[in-house]
Length: 202
Image (cartoon, rainbow, N blue to C red; front, side, top):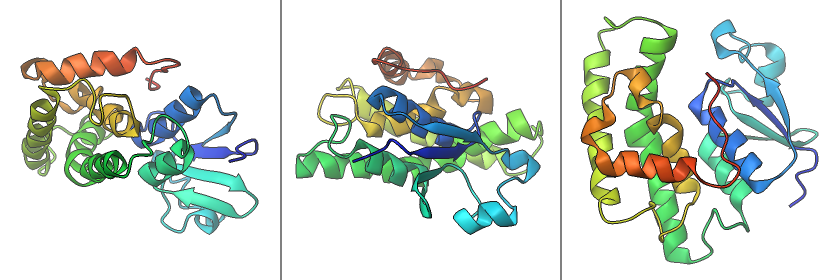
């Protein structure tokens, strides 16, 4: 896969965009980062919508007119052929299972609670209690799974870990207390010690 011309359109404080930047860094693949501020509606311009009609970040450009949206789809594409995406069919399916889990049962609550508290600065948002409740449910599932293993799939760091790490390690910004999840905290530490790890922008 030739990634020499790769461009990433993203917002540095976004966990979904961070996933892509982190994986590219760990793969040691060159890329150009193009900052796009969703809070300033820069994803709603005609120029951006022509690239991604869904008007969201991150967006991967691999060549003229060749765009891929959705953070976890981008992870799968970039990780193909690497140690971060298992070749074994069962383990690959398990990675997919956790990627789907992250987008359906984790990100909508933990990431959204973070957005409400950190960016909207609105702790009285009516939907926040439900998001907090569901976020804790997601963390409990992770705690149970990690209680008997170091990483999510096959005993090795993969894009399943990377995807779930992105918003879990800043869950406190959404009001979540990770003190009651020792297995999750130990896993976060292991992920942070992976080669070429980089931090999420403040």
